[in-house]
Length: 490
Image (cartoon, rainbow, N blue to C red; front, side):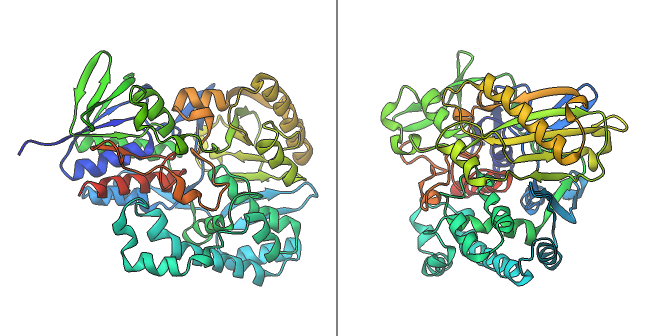
């Protein structure tokens, strides 16, 4: 029997993971990537002696990366190493409060009590609830397709359905956190987890309280080569398995004949395949690659509300700040106003929460001696035609003012190198519709059920992976989407 061929559109992390899994199963796998580099959002920027991880900066659930090497019969440590963080993130509040989010549950709970007065027992109870939500949802909502009957015929699925109220889907995240904590700073701390999938804590379901479990049970890590080393190590593995990467290769069309995906069309030629996997945002997959087949388009899914986007400044800073950590959050004083600006007014709050990542804290050669590489990010709305040039100019000044005040230093005088990524460039570089980072938002209690499936119901041989489809965005879920795709082909 001849070897079956799989074509993958887009070399994002989910596509690379899919390629590895398919190659292990015996497929001949070939990538077609429009950019000159792999990784999609999980890429890097080098400028003026500074190196930055361009996209995702928080690494959790490393077992999903390790699993790919083990499937191929390799030792993960020969390709990819990482270290666990004792402090996941450092938090700065407008009132001067500073919190260290220790990975250890007891130490973290005591830190909360010491700094805010919120009883440690309340924090431990909250994290226990987070663990319960994870145990209910993990095997059903994350590791399997929600679009196949056999998923719902399994006993563990039935058991999870019987415990459905426990995942707290009918309250908002903010309402649940407000009922569990008295201190507004602690409520804000746990509300922030809605931003992990580009959502609004005042609309998104309390089911998102599952996310703290990933940090405070499984832990957060730093890849020894930086986040981009995840991409590099998996590309190396894929190539060793015979996967071929074609860069500068924009796909124009998915070829469909009699309801079956027969390959792709790119650079004026048809490239035949037994199956096609799209790692491109599902909106662009339909609108660009299946544009001539409008009857195939799932209109309700494609019209869903998009997740938030990001505005990122990559700053080379000619100084070191020992009070800062790898991950740092500078909270806004009015969280509700900030999210109202993003979701209702479709603009940027003047006093936004600022996320600051400094990989040179762990990988010293990411910045020149005595300097730091600052990845400075705020949450912003998806691109709906706003005046981004003005929004960026104003946001930059507001961010610099905020950081200068808290750090007691004029940050504007320390910036010696700068690049900017905004919703427009996120869309153009990563084919993320409207620059939304996580596909659709989770501002709906049924969001988990409304994401696009990993397999087309109308085109045989067409599959989908990545952050815009089930189970969602972020590195762990993207890797799980690849697992679901490969298991569909058994």
